[in-house]
Image (cartoon, rainbow, N blue to C red; front, side, top):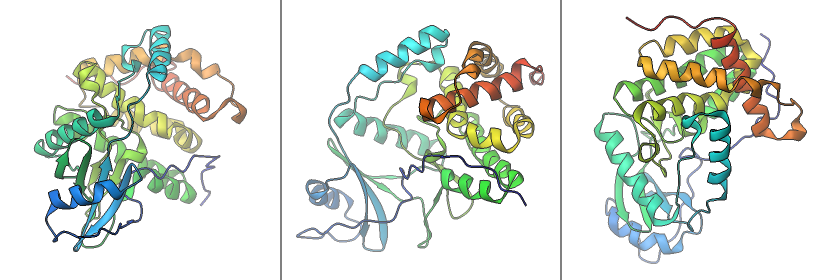
Amino acid sequence: MNSVKRGTRVQARKGLASAPAPLETNHPPEPGDYAEFLRATLPHQHKAVASHRLGSERVWLKKAGPPHGKLGYHLMAMVAGLLRLDVLTPVPNPGGEAAIATEARRLRALGAAGLRVPAVLAQQPDGLLISDLGESGRPPVVLQERLDHAAAIGPSALLAAWREGLDAIATVHAHGTYLSQAFDRNLVLCPDGTIGYIDFEDDPGETLPLAECQVRDWLSYLHSTAMLVRAASAGAAGTQWHAALADASDEVRERLALAARRMRWLRHLPAGRRWGRDTQRSRAVARLLWRWYCSAPPPPARP
């Protein structure tokens, strides 16, 4: 079977599925004493995110970093204004202790809604200890990696894996909520086959209404996968896209169609790698949306 050309896809290994990196402490707490483990370990951790062993458990510790600057947000706001798309309005991520508080709050809310997210084990202003999404010694697999492996097999395998991400986003929206950055690197396949969700340092709901937050989820996932999908089969991917959106609200569907029209000129961006990865991805997104919404009408809204 012919494999899908992968290009130079960036292999970001961000997320909760990398190999554990235990740290030594002078007075290791007893297994299950999460608050004490966080208190004792946080001062010795230099990375923003690291995994540890606490007894037989694998846990993750996130520490507050320095506050984030605002220049990038201003640039994105200009792009959103140019395209007249509120969905592209940047969601502030202040970093520091505010990001820790936001992540803890969102994890608790999404977990209470019945979605697969890490559990908050312990929290203090400058650090957060959360559970791993693996089980019985089996780690989860980042969907980004799963897509890369599937692309090496062929278009059918890639589209099947890609549909798993679409269905996972649809599941979140069916619960009346949204993600934060719905990129393929923030979706993980758990050992039982369920998709889990990670990385919630910002909250789009503080800036955007629910429909815009959900549209942002769809566009974020497409942005992170468009180059692979377009290389595989743009037509078949469009069928899957509309099928996954069949139960979305009419407002979400209409806003996606609007985004397709207003982003159409991005399909003429240069294709060369010299223009940067984000330019290539934006071009691929615009070309897919144009094909799925503008060159042929999308399926009618559900009754």
